Image: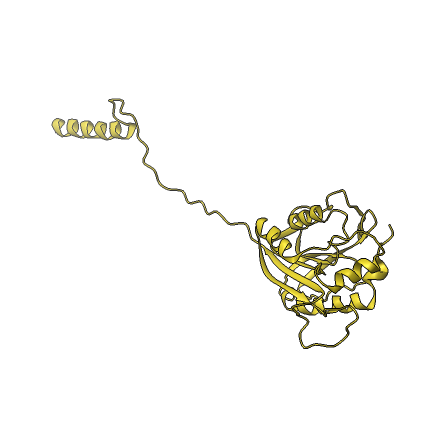
Length: 239
């Protein structure tokens, strides 16, 4: 599989934007604990984040017709993972390159474990970055995502959205260092959400009275008691 738009997403402006997004995500991702994480990238050149509390990664990158990396997956097929497989799903600029972004988002929610974290980054469709990206993509279709739409979509699916921010400079050519990567007119965005844990239902048995139909006869225990009384009375008469 050939990676499309690799030059665009590995260009200096995009790498700077990714660094700023990663910096803003770092406090939230540091809390992630688990055995498996899924990383889905726009380019295979991005390094994996250093998260010591996460066991191992499965890495995929968007390519023509699907995704490849540790596995090869077609875009029109479900992701080859069981439900609730990953404690962290990190998607960096990949939704806007996916041929079926809505279906991909459904799959990402499916494989996210209850209590796990979903982190999404991308280029904001409103601003100079959007025009620059379409120009650099040379007419190829891009599905830039509106963060507020992503937020409403995730909330409808039962996820708790913890953070939504615009990130980076307003123009791709700007390389001025700032104290904080967050910016009202930033060219990128990040979204951090958490999947609700399944509620645990505790079952407690309640004692119930059971009616026993009366047959007009004594129970075996009662008959034995009556027999002992009769026998005892007969013995006293004989004395």
